[in-house]
Image (cartoon, rainbow, N blue to C red; front, side, top):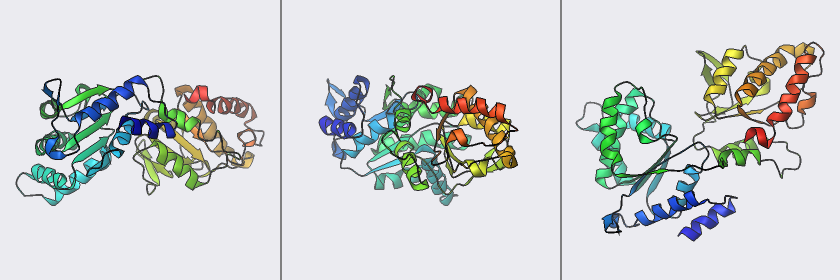
Amino acid sequence: MIKKILNNLKNQGIKVNQVQSDLLEEMIDSLSINKSSINVLKNNRVNKKNFYIWGDVGRGKTIMTKSFLDSIQSKKAIFHYIDFMQDIQSQLYSLSGKKNPIEKVAQSLNKRYEIIFIDEFQVEDVADAMIVGKLLDNLNRLGVILYLTSNVHPNDLYKNGLQRKKFIDDMSLIIKSFNIYELNGEIDYRARNIVNEDKDKLNQVYTDEEIKIVIEKNFFNKDYDKNKFQINSREFSCKAYSKDFIWLSFNIFFSEPNGSDDYIELSKKMEWIFLNDFRVCDDESADIIRRFISFIDVCYRDRTRIKFFFGSCSYKNLYTGEKLKILWDRCKSRLSEMQTSNYLS
């Protein structure tokens, strides 16, 4: 099985390091495909079947787990944490007034799946915190195999959250049944993929559909129906967003009344920003360029990762006016640097 997984990863341009290889081996060793014989003896002990894999962004947690699960013929579900909890909350709402609703939800999931993978496990909401530990415990008792990936160790989940002690008490029961595995390394695979995306593209002009493909490759949760987002209690336009990225239209977003405070919040919250729909501006549209310069100043200072899709509109000629020439010359220099592998990596 390991050779098949490694070959699949190699075909995606991923050279597996020793830490990742060890993780794959442990997951293979822990699992028997027949649900009735999940608990496998190894070194005279019963293997834990669940995995909690944590580490920095882009270290291969998601792709390693998905590649492993793709090699298994079993009833399985793959969720992003946000989507998973929205589904659970919806099921609980439909069971309002009935006894033991969390147990009933777990039983329903157990009938459908033998394996559940929850990606980007990061509890932030008190309503979720009061549910998720008990739900995972019920799933584990029913024999559902659980794989969780997160950016933080289990002990650091829901830090400073309301009623955190209750959450920790619930989670402490389930976490004993998990292999806790830290996955770190020098390579940020997501950044590498995005940086190298247009290396072999001749004209480097991307349609919206091609940008969607870039997002699909690198982000698990995305919603192209969300064309509005909120920053500083105000609403602005976008093409898609999640907790990890936002896709903005230059022509639309910088025509809206936003400013430095909004860019600072965007820079703080987003791991990646995608930007397209550029058009040449002159002094008649100086407000658009002024906002864009301010946006670049903030993002450059904060080392925010931005993937620019300039297309046929070269960044060098994006502004043809005179009013902002001094500011624009500095901005051009920053734009040049922000597109380099050194900056993005």
